[in-house]
Length: 312
Image (cartoon, rainbow, N blue to C red; front, side, top):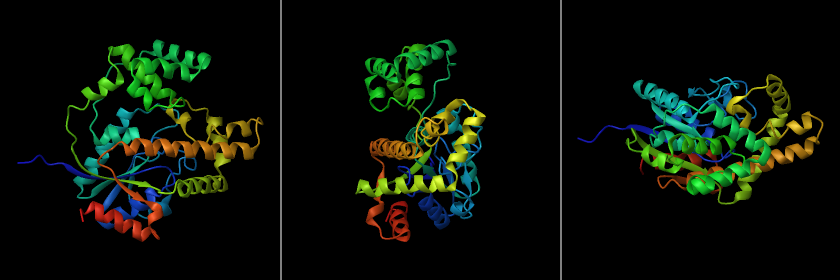
């Protein structure tokens, strides 16, 4: 008798591609509930910068793992997977279908592939040494060191991914094993999920980039500057400081740059992030791609998604 696996639908993709809207429509169609797969929407108060769905966008569909962590708290991938598994089990236990929605590739892969995480404690002395080196030599120096130790892990990281670069170096420092090897060893337990994965994309990259640019403009209209001021005033540490949307506006808030320059930088960084998101999801051979510019309406896109979900 085949082992039972929990049905899990994943709707992922780059920022501004319409994931939340599609996921809400899918949930309504299949009696589902949404589980966020976004590493920044987990934080309280960071609503506009992270494009956190409001009540209207949720449209009565229950959402899990949104706004439940303090911005000053460091939140790991392992902690996310634990919380997501609990939410999925709760949803399924009530006879509903979990729909994973978001764009954080590391969260997605770690959850659906049931990655096991090493439990060694962080070497705070070594971590501080790495942080000081990053400040003095630049993050690129740490990434170069990682590429010599673990070229595969380094190849999917960007210089801005300081936390992940340090984590990969910490794993090697603590265990003598590369992060790539550790990942292979961590996949020994089969996934508990029967996965149907959909990634939203655009055949014409300009379509996606235009949506990103318009989203940034809307964020500013909704009060992104004021939210950024509150964020920096609260002076959070942890992983929240990595959020795109605040740091790009900081030079304006500190009278070091014009608002126009900062907004253009924010749009550029968001476009670059979208490109990295797509690179991540394209590596997953299970992924079904839907191109938003192929469809004349949200309803047509929903019907295309339902064909994939229902196996038609």
